[in-house]
Length: 193
Image 1 (cartoon, rainbow, N blue to C red):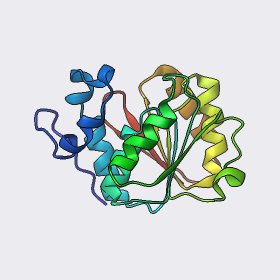
Image 2 (image 1 turned 60 degrees about the horizontal axis):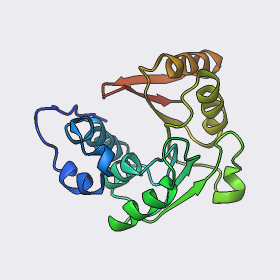
Image 3 (image 1 turned 90 degrees about the vertical axis):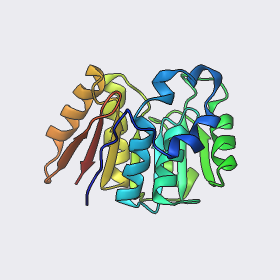
């Protein structure tokens, strides 16, 4: 597999599709000129997951990017507590639907969410962790959702709290584990085991 890093000075074609979905508050240079969503797109294209679960969906930009890169229109799931944005589950669902992507996004606390009961699935090819950013909360998410995949993608790895959680998670694993840092706005970690 090869990952291609995105030059932030070159506009990625995916942004022409994604940027019209941005909420007003997200139309500034941080989102419009960021390499974050093109990188999600490229990760989807390289990993080609058939199923994705995203923990912390907000408005669905990253899930849309992963799904579009992987050329998926179904097999997509998300959980959001709406801690950042009220009505984000509804907006994310509409954003994804406008791109022809069928996703099941549920409102819920990731720490209490019953994945098997609600989604009827025991395994996902890729789980994207971008929910609780406290050290304890992120660690709980990593431990809980690692049971449903062999591939985790963690956003905001440069946030000290998330980094502490990832470090604790990695050192708790007995089996071999691969961790790849991918530079983005706040850093991605691809964890495979």
